Image (cartoon, rainbow, N blue to C red; front, top):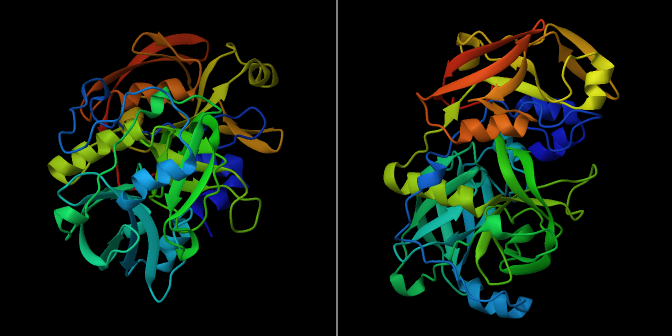
Amino acid sequence: MSFLRRTFTHPFVSALLGGALVAAAFLVALGAGWVGDDDDATAAPALSSLPAADTGPDDQSAVNKIYEATSAGVVYIEADGVTDSQQELSPFGGPPQQGTATGSGFVIDEEGHIVTNAHVVEGADEVRVTIGEDGDPVSADVVGADPSTDLALLDADASAGDLHPLPLGRSSDLEVGDPLVAIGNPLGLDHTATAGIVSALGRTIDSPNGFSITNAIQTDAPINPGNSGGPLFDAEGDVVGINSQIATAGGEGNIGIGFAVPAETAREVIDDLLDDGEVSQAFLGLTGADITPEVADVLDLPVEEGVLVQDVVPDGPADEAGIEAGRAEAQIGPGAMKIGGDIITEVDGEPVDSMEDVIAAVEDREPGDDLEVGVLRDGDEETVTAELADRPDQATP
């Protein structure tokens, strides 16, 4: 049913499509190369319309206290006209019901703006939201959506008295083992709370349009179809993530592995959507595989770390800069790997240990910026300059 579920069983294929969740054998983050920039991450403007996150002591609030304090700001979403194919890409948006997709969201300001997943509302003819547990459905407009981060911003036709904004917290402060609470509408059961912990941080997951979402939060809090777009809270009751995907072992439903887009990413995307209704992200246009000592030994590579270029998007920035893709295929464990391409060793003079370093460098740039890429080709070191472009609507396999 889900995009993640399909690719989860084929890690190498998942990587080529835009960012591996789990890599086969020695492959990590293969395909995260055409990643985007959420504008200037070092100078993201403060969101005056968003309430500030609580900076109080780290008290381990009980689930019921978090629910009491936040549930009024959680939203049930119905989107008419979302196609079956879009639902197929939906990691866990509710199944189509007579052409209606269901999901979750949350209020961020007193003007009626609501955050949800892009895959919940993309292509919808009409969107309705029910705010709080006892509210009536009201219409909502899609202000903008960014499939690359699977985030969307709605504007609900609701009165200020019905709106209970929820604060965006800091996912960067999370540590593995921290408690988390998810509130949403799994299987159409509105305002369901589930609890768990941070299972892992810094995960890379696929977006609906095939690009990579980095720094995702992994949690064992039970998440099911219909939780899409709902908030993931920390112990302070701040939103630290937007629930977006689940992994399954061949069936439907929760197996204790869920993923949320981090609040830092959401903050920057929301800013852009509030300002312009769209998000501008940089694009390099290549896929790559991490080089480890094991990979270097098997393939007889001259270095034990870096990125082995797999594919280059024709006429993209990497291609225009002269970066060369792999030309032959080698079998490594259960997966395959292209060999004979350039090895990326540096980006802007900084050593590259993995594809995550390339991702981070592109995410710190804007379209039109130059990126200096150090490559090793046939034993010779070379530096090329790639002028980053605007990210296309769809990743090229």
